[in-house]
Length: 520
Ligand SMILES: [Zn+2]
Ligand SMILES: [Zn+2]
Figure: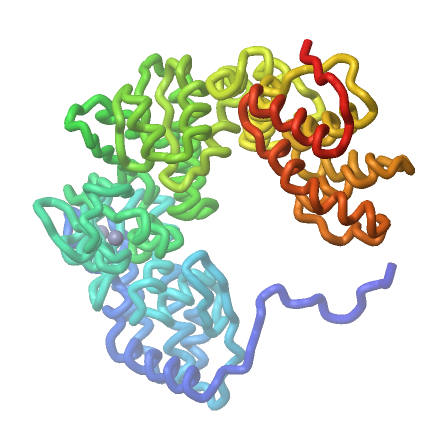
């Protein structure tokens, strides 16, 4: 390890002040020199215990020495901490060269200040930024903690309401405006998007008797609306000033009010404290809260269906029709949800697969049974090889299999076929139960040198639309095959059991295979 030597590193970041910052700070120091009252909050309540009377006496004494830099430097090291910051700051007027500015970072941003005297950095920042509603409250944060005082800073006002939380009307209005709630309706400040009838977050500002209500979109814009509302406040616990709730009004297309307050539940205390500490933003708070609300629905014994902001009551049919118009999807959803006894709540953007996946472990078999036979449902539901596949894929595979099973049930079974009969039967059966690729595989695997078999193969290739295999055949086989194509096609495309049989007999006759084709 390398030994550290020399001066220990300064923890505070310092930087050379720019000309404007310098002029700015000197200008403010001059104003303060002539008017110490600028940094003293205005007590509007019964504030007999507020310490500002004592501070004021000290400030007046300091300003008597405003032209004596040495005395000011001394005064910046003793007495009331706010008074020290004052002495240190007005002393800057006498400096020929500006000291380095330090910066400090808070949740509300980064601020620069001249590090002078012997006091706290909050006092220095507050005094030197007495013109900023956001920063000047820092000069009193220690009083908030020690004495339980309440301060509100906005515009050119810096108000103390003593031990009672009582935000001035103007503060409430400008704070509400800062989060986008500038429309007043009754006792509420609202964002412009009619938030009460859509998803919203509500800040019931208990100490002010007002409410601030934002739609989810507006709440998402401010990273943390509570922090923004409390930006000019210095109070013991900002979160205690508000009752925060998340509103999820539900519309009911059928007119009944079966869902009511289904999704309106109190926000968990733990989430609220994470939010007030700034560890969660509005969006995260809302998302996490709604996650909890939905989890709790599993314990509610009530059969209702909700999609987005619409409540369908217990009308499962209307609910699934709203999600999809594909018959397989709607039938499987109905099967899936037929035995669910608690509320089912999905987002309007949720896919069918997502909904299936949510209930698959408990009700997947019922979803499959709604679209295929019980036997197939049990087979596909229990198939370990499909365990990693999405529910919608398992359903598609099961219905495909059901379709093939149906096709094979329509193909007669034969006994005693000649090699020609067996070949034609194998090709047709593969095509109908497994599809084109399987039929081609049967053809490709046929290595017989028998001209009749080879002509039949050529005919099937042509009937399947495959012209690239002609090189395999002699001219004679090609000609014969071309003649047989239409009969091969007839066999492949036959639908009913009877048609299949007739087509097979005709194909074999045309191919010159004289035999009795016998069904079993
Ligand atoms: Zn006061
Ligand atoms: Zn809005």
